Length: 549
Image (tube, rainbow, N blue to C red):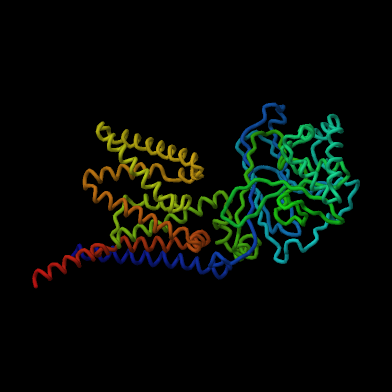
């Protein structure tokens, strides 16, 4: 009776704890859904992106004087608002740096200047902004004016937005003969101003032309065809400029590089040249970051500055309005949400919040269904790996690695190694197997090397060891059943966590993980028949009834 009463008390406490966690999770969820206007579904379209630039300052320049070495100055170009895109909100996380944001004189370029008077290494600067596509913007239907400011001797658009060093180099070593020859060639092949621009751009693409090579050697970025085209057009008195920006795509969080393009003045507006179809149109493809041939950042007193630009498309109108535009700035649930983390950290948590959901699926399959697996975390991590490889490639790779690993484990068993060195040997063999498969796929032009490396190597090594021990103790049949069960659980978990609604709910409403915790507690108190056992016992009962009859 005492044992029965203790069991009832534990079950009651587990039930009360589960109800308590569920109440908290649902309360926070409903508050965020109603008071904060955070959307429930991931397909509430709103054309906006989160853009983040991360600067990592790793070391000091040894060539500077002591005064310069004790101070750091960094100038970073910032993205610009345009007729296509608005900078809804932007903020900085720059530690002990002093910051000044300004627009350069006679230019549309915005810069942030960071200064710091110490010699500490490993400094980080974060710039974050939300960029929104104008709701009323339709490609190729609006004029994009040059500027509200007056052009003075074309200073706004000259290739001279370069540094003084490059300007001096151009003056001293300007290959006049080669420039005139290329300009005359373009004029002879063109019928109007726009066709002349097209010819100049085609000339700028020639990498084996000696005349082009002579001009490129004098430019700051000799590999840039738009910069060379702008330089030649300026020499021909055609107003042109180099645009620099990023492409905003509709996909998950991604790192991106800067792209250059050519723009020419047409009347009172700018037209971008599309090198794909050789057409001219308003620039609406890229988010403009800066104009000119300068680098995106200039630094003094520091070296080895790493810049990473990360973009996250936002399809949630409620998230944009509530979190970034300050309409609900007083809501602490949003002020301290995952959306206020740097985008690199958000990428990590977008995966981490799926792990508890996968663990719940595994616990249900194991405790209630009765599915045998190699542990709990192995199927979860394999399911996460399938997000990168896909099922068609991931399943054969998993089976192949396990089979080869078991063969190696069988040979090591003959050597009668101790358990720790044996595990280390299996881990090393697993890495070599995956490296070999990556090389083979590379020669077959199958670009899956990065995806393969995302397989949890340590878990695979432990799975091989676990499978080998099961084979020795319980036989081949139980090993195959547990292996197939692990694979089936991983596939089920994969199909769940790749669902857009699951990903959105888990990341936008992490408080729902309290419900997952409550379900795990309830599943943990379940001690009834497992589904597989029910069918097995029912079959035995049928046979018994037939015998008795």
